[in-house]
Image (cartoon, rainbow, N blue to C red; front, side):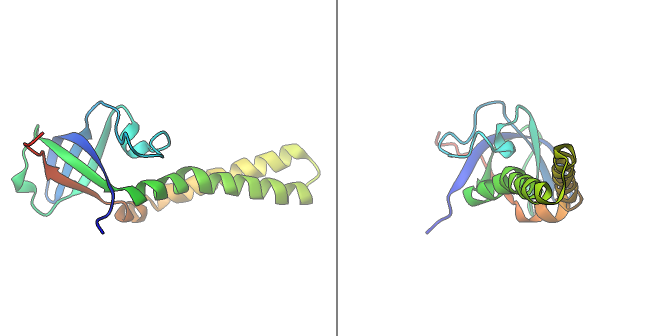
Length: 143
């Protein structure tokens, strides 16, 4: 059974050794995706995605291409970006309110925990990016 993939049209803005840099064109993406409102990969106004490509010589700057990402990876991104920090915030607030008397300290600890979480995500971004693969294909002429 083939994997479900989100498809978005993009324009190649640069090509380097084994990377094609694609700007997602300005239009609403992922129409059928249930998590599209939370997804930052395809919904931002201007987004340049670096796609590892073993045949970059087949593409040209300015060419319109299709960018694909497995749908399951979109859900994983939502979990990393929104669900886990919210769970962490709630856990720290519940545990902190049990041990600390002042609510201000509890709130500060909870916010600090979320900031540390995002800092760790930022530090590990290259490793995380290896799990989130985008694929590029020449634009279908049958459309």
